[in-house]
Length: 208
Image 1 (cartoon, rainbow, N blue to C red):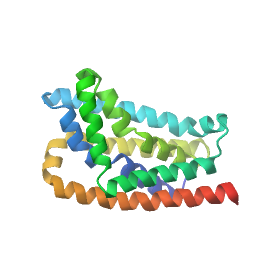
Image 2 (tube, rainbow, N blue to C red):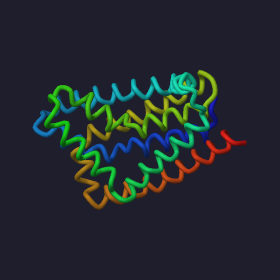
Image 3 (cartoon, rainbow, N blue to C red):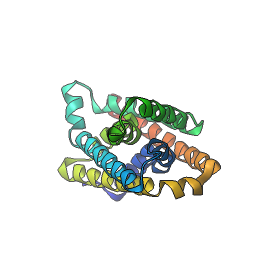
Image 4 (spheres, rainbow, N blue to C red):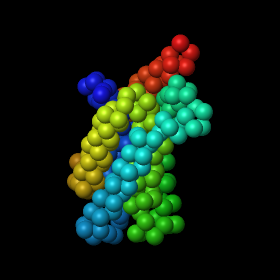
């Protein structure tokens, strides 16, 4: 069973990595021309699929690494560096540009009924950063109780994602360009600190 600090750290890491407020304008772009019920259906389906993906990695991520001969220490270092790269993109507004390009590509190549799967569930919600963070956090929690706690944290984060998508239009209007830029940079700084901690823990685990 994880202590409160570990659960708060897990929640913060996943929340910052997934970035629900940042998904709002992308979701509006993806679902342009849809009715409110259609948007709601896409949001629910996309969030549910993303929850399923992250749950699988929460339960079996460590086993997959073990089967590949990758130690948790090595993955913490690699995952921490990857999350730091995402944080760097957030601070310098590169991540939103990349996601917007992904969104534009998907609109031209994918049928509208598949938007919930790609690119909403993958890679906008359950992207490489969120998957890496889930596996990293899972490696710090012991036993099935710890895994269940992590799944609960994932559920809370995805519920916030669903809420953000449900109120995407007013949220996007409320934050505006300046608000989104400020929030993204603040979250990026926080994620950078968390990613460095993962690297430090990985070095300790691998070499101590």
